[in-house]
Length: 443
Image (cartoon, rainbow, N blue to C red; front, top):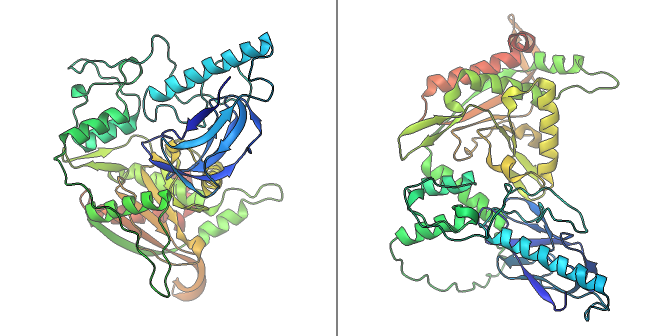
């Protein structure tokens, strides 16, 4: 590499427009290799490791830690390593040429479709130094990307997010001119079609900075909070929700969990048992493991149950999903829950885990509260929450005795079912908690 090259922050997936620099892994003057991770950035979805498409010496870091960078703006500039600018050896020249070819491949893949290549999950399968990851893209071969005329022939769309975007905005994929590799319709293609179909809008008024009044301070929403705000606002604006709740005697479940513990194995946690009962309830009431297609007036039930779990992490509240929870045992659910929640707390849940949930389970008892009127995670149609388990006086066989009680609250989309269905689902879960041994025997 004979001249300095500047790497611009790419689209990190799903059309995100900005990212915050969390931690630089290199400093100015360091030598980096192609595909070496140079920085961790935080998007509205997760913390992403960004590898370098160039090899050489770091000349400039264009943003400080904590600073937000827009997509398409300079992130890092990399020049030739010291003593290598003039190509002092044939071997050095060959290495530089190979590095440039790999960088060209990297840019070609990135430009083939906005979001088709997620930076931080590998750039190329060619040989080269540095840490490797398997690319998330499909295998490709053939000529570079060219625009394919629109028509009524087969439509190539790799990303389900692109299909969802087109569906939500009423865009006919057959009428789009694809610009992706081998005629793939990309997110940018769909966004252009949406913009072309939208009525012309008056230019937005310039944003005027507001000075804080005395005794107040203003904290800008970061990309994550903006995404959360948009999702929750959409849920409350679109879904006519209803909430029901019931107190549940969890004493038998508590005792079962304690009896399963040994000196060497703590056994499944309470949440794993509850998750197992929730999965069984969703199998009995599949209308709650669904989404509502308002354009076609259809309830779309899912075959698989991807159980979302509300997790309070370093970045805020996220809802990663245990994928394929319907096929897991209690022990399997326990392992999967611990794994996905641990990664979600530090921003390491995958994009699929954060977007694939079909139903959400919320353990707000971890915050030492008893109840909550939760907001449904759109486009899901229901969310089930549990409060803390505490000793309370309870009537058993005519006697007041201390029992371990939890409050279960259920919020559901009243468009997909009525109270009878919601109550039936709740009671199926509550009855399993109160008689866990017999419930597990039936599963």
